[in-house]
Image (tube, rainbow, N blue to C red; front, side):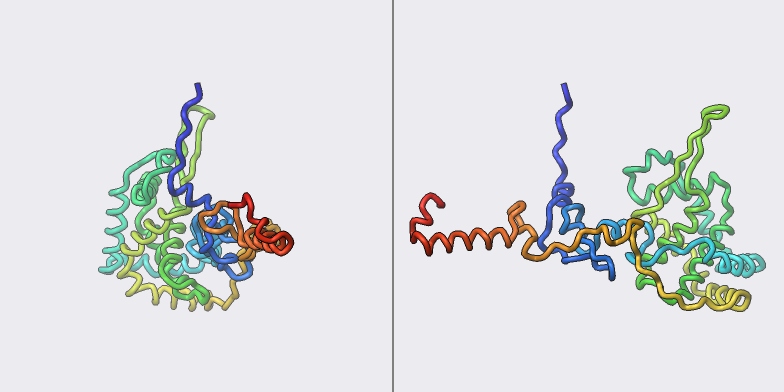
Length: 294
């Protein structure tokens, strides 16, 4: 006997319903896709599925994460600046804070983190860094490099979300997963997902640990980078497009074709066509047009 089917949650039902409050097309310039709420594939009123997932991964709807090649000159400048200044009060304070975060992490299997809350996932990320024997100085160097690049970035998004995600991703790359060995020639590797609220929580924690270093030393690190490698040239950010291109995206749904709220698949166009038929029949046969209709 088959097990009874579980009733979908209210959130699932809301995600599958089309909303009349959604915008006509995605809010990202040049996209043209239908928002999730209008297409019945999610809850976002202003973003399509691709750009909503893009923001979850990168912290912005339109700007990609900093690559390792982009961060390389800032990392060199940060390493050269921080190495002789470890006794400095704020740098030593940041190292102690990062060391405390590594010690407070709890080792958890990645397969057990799927439904955990972001705080548990963040502590597990610090535990992976501790188990991989990543020194706090390397983590601080990565954070200072990201802070310096963000300070010089001419096209950075407003707010702190993008910065928090970049801090988390730069450190997450150091120990993204775990390898379990079951014997000679038998091992299994699983990496944690670099997306979602865990990046915001992890980045916010790292930014708090380095907040005084950001205020006191990051401008000097940026000046050292500019002296050694030159200033970053202005570059216009390209439009974010999927790997399939935007041509495959369905055109936006016209307002007259959007389903009415609470009426299933009935659209204003369907209501207008039915009213036109009734008016035509009324002109032809009079009140008999309404017999049996109500």
